[in-house]
Length: 267
Image 1: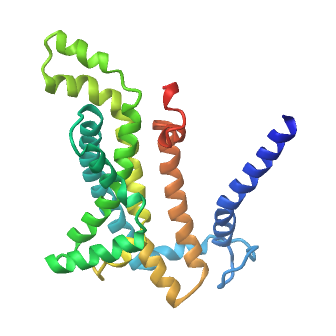
Image 2: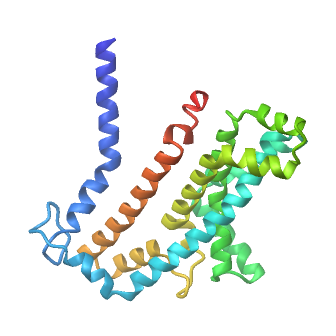
Image 3: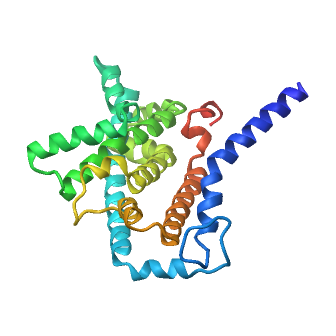
């Protein structure tokens, strides 16, 4: 048994090392003092982080990405929360199909989604607009909110709602004072995940952006086609740091084990 646990631990360590290896390369490389990418870095300097502010396309795209991700998170959370509540609390014909439809963006390749949205939005005249980009990000973010809300509802104590109804509380008051507070960690985590999904997206955005709606990941991608210098590593490090902050926040608010449904019974 000990040997088996040791082997499992070794495999787990190697997998984790493989997953975080890009971080171990990109972040140190961003502190190089030379004008070309090198690992291990040559010297130590933070000048490439300072140079980010000399490139308005990066600062503008960063602010645009934050605005887009924030709106995506709010809209996705509203739709995903209501959808999750309806699927969990009410049994109706076609609920399984609707659940599968809402989660389908997780199974369909992002490339296919991007092409399909480009064709559809071109027909309706919103391709290359902020509205089209926002709708596409909402589409790919909703499944994460639905997943988290359904996971939160899997351990939800419905007797509290029934007790409130028996005491004469109105449905709106039960929802506001009981349902929402109990589901708040799941809802907030869904919002965080929707924000990250929008902020980091490249594949779907690639088909729907225009010069006035360029996100930060696509600005980095465009810069890499022109010049592969340490500036790319410094900007990537900023994106990685921001993502890590939100992942840590997600763990503190909800727990990554509950996110994947591996520990729902214990809560």
